Length: 190
Image (cartoon, rainbow, N blue to C red; front, side, top):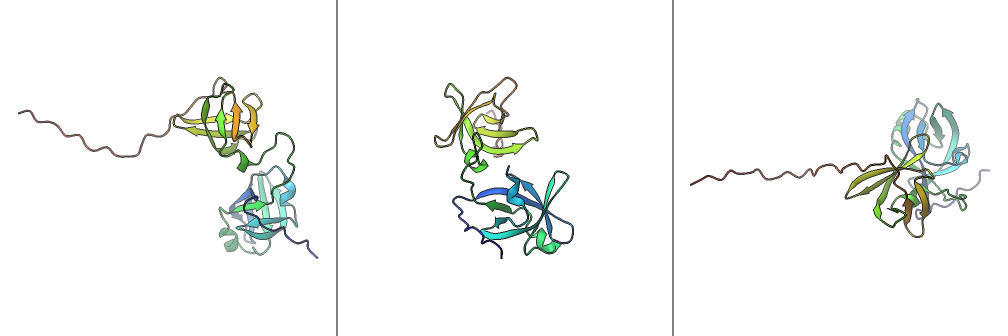
């Protein structure tokens, strides 16, 4: 008898991975993991795919990739239809100190220790050695490494992240407006 899947709650579910491609011909999928809890992907674990529970039949690591076989996905065509879809899981109650959900960090206001607003955290990506926060504002884009010398405080309830802009971190300009200007006309002299 298999344990019953937890009830899906879209308000508290967190994205733990994204299916990036099929692998092979037997329905296996390659997953880009966005969770620090590998037990979420173990054989027998339940994940949510578009709000429906799906059980992990097989899980294995191949190089840097996580390969999953999901219940009900038995061929390449079925795996291909899942490309780009998010895998979600219930929110864990206690993550531990200085550990946050990605969804909780996106949208935080980035401010300096002096209180200057830099912008809003729009995205997070991993470099392998650490995560990087993408902060955007009218000034452009600022990439902030998630290290102790840069990120001084994370205040989820206050909606802000206190950051120190250390030497070498620079704004990149936003792309020029794509709007076309009206052509100039020459004035004729009378």
